[in-house]
Image (cartoon, rainbow, N blue to C red):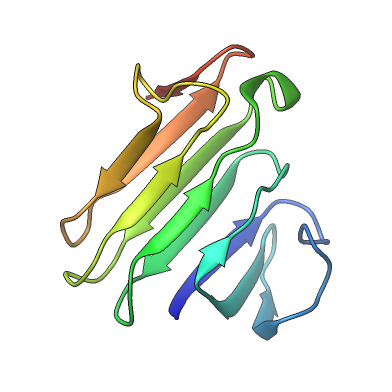
Length: 120
């Protein structure tokens, strides 16, 4: 299981409040922590996810680019062990169906233009 923190500019996380281990409200963001092996699709705009891969790989499936036009998502890997894998089974991420982060402190931001995900 891997732990991550998500920062949402809105008060409600995708999937509701289940499986949360903590929630902290700051001025503009709601910080959530939960333990997962796989994060499902999410439709929140401009989300940042801090990924702790101490206990294993963390895999994330991006939604179809056409369903989230103009959305940006940022992922930061905080631990040297294991990997963070972004998957896009319906669209490409800079020309590939997946993107993998293997180095501690790797960070990537992806942007949907409606037809593909771009690394920006």
